[in-house]
Length: 325
View 1 (cartoon, rainbow, N blue to C red):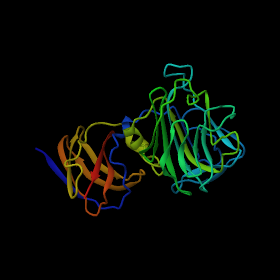
View 2 (view 1 turned 135 degrees about the vertical axis):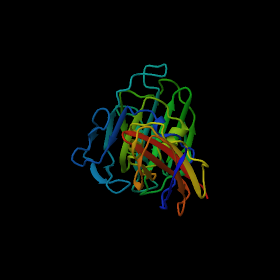
View 3 (view 1 turned 135 degrees about the horizontal axis):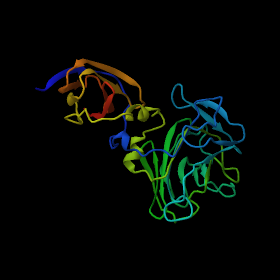
């Protein structure tokens, strides 16, 4: 017999892109760097520590408790990624970069990253004086960035096939692909915010990551924006399939999630917003093994995407639900 648990939750949340996919499907990073430890800004979360040209200052990041570095003209960050040559060439031809950036002042040239490890050429990506992101080789965006605003940029490259730039999960540049082992292939290091002739005005950066694959549009959407801090790590550990997808989905008023208790014990549900904050906890109590239902009422919930996490002893299941009124 299917038993029901009823719960109504009403919170005001940020919306996330509706085209995203299950969090756990985003590939593992090969390198990851954040700047939340002001005493050790070079420290890696994954991979080798960074090296800095110049003395980078610690500044506030995109959300409370999140720090960033400010990189002024003539300064830059060297990322040594550890990825082997791929894509049929002698360099790294298939990769993705993610970086959370903000420009304090607009309408100036801002170098984003440089593939020439000697910094002997123009940067490989810019924000130009119209605040468009890109480069002449593969194209600039039609949309412009604004000053003092944080953006999450994902550059997905498969030389010989594609060159795409996503901003906050949306495609901004479906670029002209570059040849294998061209200047858009990677050597052993990448220079962030470096340019050879002074087109590197001050930028702020709160996070950098690299993959050895070209991320898809769905994966870029899943990674969200610069305020998406920690949600993926919170939701992907020890996953099981005890919680079914809700129906209907999207929903305007009430939705139902079937769930299975594999091991008798306490069962709880947590609701996370788009930046990984727990906004509700639902204690379903001690349950015997069996099948149950959880009914969620949208109440005052704004349109958008939320994550429901079920815990039963050491088992964890997650589902993404969408409110559309």
